Length: 322
Image (tube, rainbow, N blue to C red):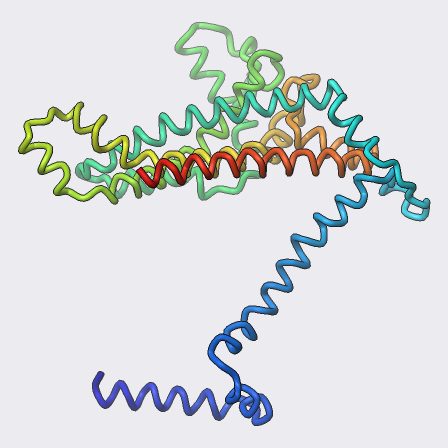
């Protein structure tokens, strides 16, 4: 390091020491680096605990009571495990869980297939690949509220572009193409929107995995006269698999909590066709005002997601260790 750089560092340290109050400076001189580090991060940790841990503990407490948020002055009575028993035996809850599983499965499947395909094509570094990468990433940059309202307009049977495109390809009249009001089509309408919005996210993760593969591995495979298909199955796919599994984990957790997109597009309708678990939870908590019951449902969802994610992470670690 040159003398000029040393003098710059010394001047910066001197200025920082001069700006520090004298009592604080005297106390910090007697602390170790570890203690100083904890002094800086402790306020952040306390804030995170207050924001995340306290609501969770409060929800656990409410789940054992008959508390209703619209009656704050009423005394909350303990009901034991009755709320959990009702949640686990309620057919409407299981129907919502099945609907959620349907969304999670199909959105992840489509996003993985399309996202990996786009990443594989962009990794070829063709002419203009940077421009097309930016264009593909645009849906992910938009707010879910904007995306929901945008696609709700596109799905309109009379003026929506989606209906005109489908009518042009199939010949079906636009008035008969009711994506959001049709019991059979409404779930797929939401799957299409979520896939359009979050496929770029999966593409970025897969692209990072493809770019992490060293070139000398492919060079050695070419020396051994391995075909492109053989290289893909023996090199590309196994080495990108941890990244694909990581994308599945992230998107699975987010789609299990899917709320804003469904609420904006269908509100859980028509009927209860698209009523996912988060919509059911909202209705129980803020429409029926069954706060204790909805808290128990929230805890059940948390345990389910946490348990499945924990099992999946263990499988991911085994794949990474191969």
